[in-house]
Image (tube, rainbow, N blue to C red; front, side, top):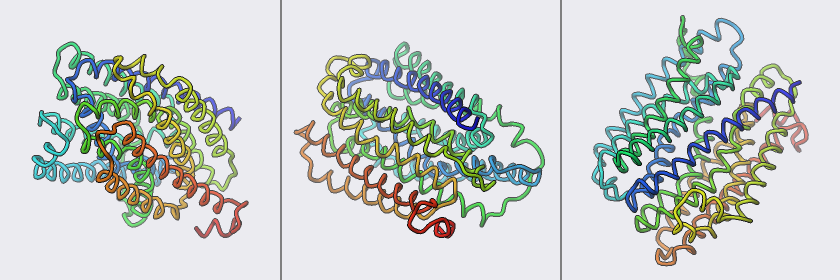
Length: 428
């Protein structure tokens, strides 16, 4: 029954992921045709930057999912409510500090990212607030294993973004500013549904949280998941900074298609996480990790194989004919993103069990990746577009493979099959 439950819930989340992906993909049917040349590349730079803005709150979703899954008595529920209220305040103050920093550096940011419409930058900043709040309520949904609405909120976010972009950009012609407004509205719709569905968890009497214990969990979760988020998204910032605006459109198209695999199989980890938390809290054995890893490898590998055999097909479906020139890059992207996708399954398992020994290594890798991108930026030849793009993607794949190897090592060490045995695992 446990296996059936996992695959039923995972199946629904895959359906939700596919539906969300279809709407997110449909955005890229509209955006290249509704935006000016170069603005599409800017759109696909601001959206990943928005993802990086949410990195400080990534651990928030994980820790709240962990806390919600383990809340069995009223005292624990009161602590959970206190945590939610403090987090909403803390993330607002964090966002406010970031908004002030953007205001101070606005001229530098507008110049380096080649942003002609400053309103697009400020709408992105404003969207960051809702993006910081979203993991709070998504974590509650995930922790109570309300995957029905967890999936619906994801679909609503994708559908809302697509419809808003179609109306604001394609029909009304509001350009990059309108595109970021569409992103903002999609995030807001998803957040509103999550708030409504979790009201029974955050409304009611609350206790003060014990900061030392709470931070001991949220900091490694944020850093661990945030490190892989950085590795997955930082390349677009380099490309936008080094290459001409129109050229970045082509790279961002390949990136969207290649990274789609990671977003497609990501729900496996989301279903797995609270189940691992509950099994660890009750000292129960579970094979949900092996199921999630196997399904992720199978689906991700099949997707990468399709991208290798017919890389031109998704480009033909989504983009204008001139984008076919980037087809040779899509197989590279698909296979180079796959190790990071598998790593996320293992990372979620380790963090759900409180095995934080892997976190410092993930930080080192993220810093190493940032240094590698900095070195690449001074050595690649922007005139050799495809060769330069392959160098950037291969670098992503190399660090993704190292990440997977480290995650496999720590996973092996923390099981009873590892060389240190179960006693050693308990000490990690």
